[in-house]
Image (cartoon, rainbow, N blue to C red; front, side):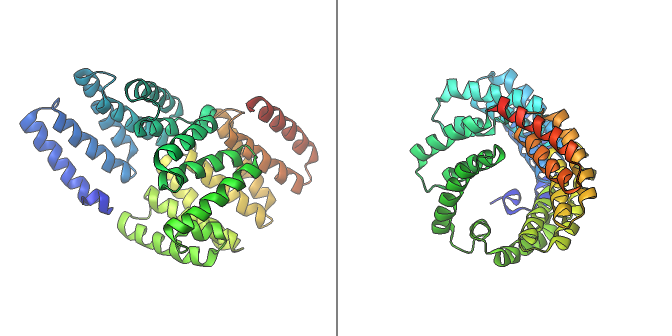
Length: 345
């Protein structure tokens, strides 16, 4: 068990730096062990939320593995996949998608469609083909691993999310019920995911508070995983009707993500959208509108008009316009949303 596995990322970083220095000194920059050490340090930087440093190392690993092993080697494809994840975290979706397509094509050719690494690459490929790929991943994981395997249930939950984003709520609900039943059996009723799905929000809140406290202590207030825990707690507070407390948490998450990732990053925009929803529930429609207009502008620019996240933001803003009695704006935006959703389907 390494420091990284234990979540002690600062200690892991110290060791990773030392190992990389020794490997470079003894073996040279191009040795496989040196490149593995470089990849490990990149992974630790990513866990610490320093995606720029992670990217710098991952670019080097990919370049050297491509030169030494060739584009089709599994280690090269792994490096390419790691870099794609980091590019996505940095908000560079075009580059991430380009890398993910290459990884998927090469893994399919090298390993076959049913190999777990191919399925992972397929699941990572985003946006336009997301739903179709998630259907394929679910089918293959069900065949290979069985219906009750955690990876199968994760794939099922991902597909449910895609159905929800496309407003196919009936299909989403069917999958979500299955996931809840199987997770209850597999993980027990006290697991946060099970409790949340079952509507036991008080118990879920207790566990999420514990997770937030431990991540804050271990990783610090500004770490992405801490902010994710804070966001999860805010969602549960909202489900409990405690919108003021949810808003306080969401404001903190938004401020920290803006500082850490920038205003245009998907995680920042998600936090902004969540805060807008809470403002709407509190009756602060003007604040909700301002936030939703910003989210919509940025999502249209980054993702395009036909992306599910963009259309979802349009739908939310339509509701807000109606609450503000801005019926003309609501009608115009609804026509656009309907048109884009038809083209997307």
